[in-house]
Image 1: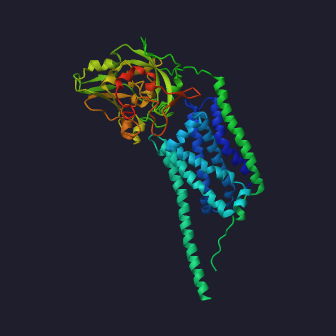
Image 2: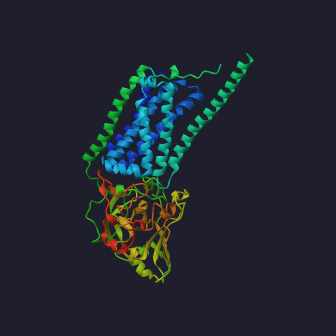
Image 3: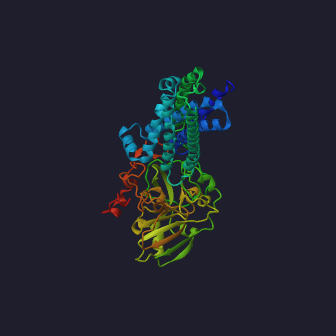
Length: 209
Length: 321
C-alpha cells in the first residue's frame, strides 16, 4: 500500500474526536453537551470494535491481505474512545466520587457490563506491541486477544440495557456483531471438519505404508 | 504423520518496527486531541456565560399573571427547552421533535371530557384556554433520565377545568390521552411505545393547585415540540407524567395504566414522584444535571415541592414508585 495511506487513516480515526471538540467550541453540542459526548464516544467504541473484528473476515473473503496492518490501529482506537468514554463517566458524571462509582458498578447491570467490556480491553491494549506478541508467543497472544469478542458483546449489551425503549440502534450493532462472530463460528467449524478429514486421511495413509 | 499446526504467529502478521513506533505518535496525538475537546468545552463556557433567550416568533399571550408558585431559580434558555425534547410521538431522538413538529397543525383541536362527569362534552381548545386567567408558573422540571430544566410555563390550575366538568363521586382518577394520528405524528409509526400515549393522576393530585393545564411558555403560545396546543405540567413528578397534546380527559373509577408503566412496569410506576431515595432500576435518581450547569446537583424530594407530601402520607413510596 501507499506509504501515506496509514497516517491518513490514523487522522481520519481522530475525526470523531476533532468533530466533538469543534462542536464543543462552537457551542453546537446542544442542550446537554455531556450527554452528547458520552453517547458519541460510546458509539465510536462500538464502531471501532466492529471495524477491528471485520478485518479478518474481509481479508479472507476479498484477499486484501494488507488490511491486517490496520487491525491493531483500529483496535487501539476502540480502546482510545473507550478511555474517553470512561473518563467522561468518572469525571463529568461521577466527579471522581469513588463511592458513587462503586455503587453504580455493583448495582447497575448496564454499568457493570460496560465496565467489564472496558476492563477486558486493557490487557489487549497493553499487549498490542510486537514485543508482547513475541513474549507471549502467537498462540497465547491470539487466545488472549479473543477477549475482544467478549468485550464487543459486553459493549452491545451495555447499550441495549441503557436505552429506555427504542432498541433500534443497539439492535443494529448487535446485527453486525452477530454477522462477524457468526463468520468466525462457521470458519471454525469448516476448519475443524477439514482438519479431521485430513487427520483421518493421514492415519489411513500411515496404515497403508 | 499428522498435519502440523503452525504454533507461532505468521511473519505476515508481525508488524514492522516503523508501525510499532506509530503507537507513540498515536498516544501523543490522542492526548492532544483529548485535551483539545475538553479545552473547547471549557473555552465555550467561559466565552458565553449566558445564552440569550431567542423567540421563534410564536404569538405572545396577553394578560399573564405572576404566580406565588414560581421559583426564582435561573430559567433554562428557550433554545434548550425547545430543542431538547422527549416526545416519542415525533422521535426518540431528543433533538428530533423540534424539526419534525414544525408543521404540526394544532387547530382545529378539540378535547373530549368524559367518563364519570356530569358534563360530558367536546370542547374546542380555545374555549378551554379562555376558562381562566393565564398565569406564569416558573417550575423545576425533572426528567426520569436525570436531567432537569427550569421553565416559565403559562396556564392555569387543572382544577379550574375539573370543577367546571363537575366529576361524579365515583371519579377517583383522571386519565389523559394524547392525539393518535401517525400521519401528523411520525413517531407513532414506530411501535416503540403503545399509542396513543396515556397518563393519569389520582383525583387529589389532579386537583392540587400546582398541577398546571398548560398552553404556553416564555410568555408565548406553546411550541409544537413542547406539547402544543395543550399539555399537563405536574412539577413534583418525573417529566413523562406531564402529558403533551391532550385530546381527551376521562374521569375514571379505577387507576389508569399509564404508557411508560405498561411499557416497563418495574421501572416506571403510576405515581412516578421525583424521589432521590428511590432509584430507577438502572440508574440512580439521587442527582440530576440541570441543563447548562457543569456539576450535578442533588435531586430534591418531590422535586422540591414539599407541599404535596401530605398527598402521600402513610404511603410506602418505595412500593408506590
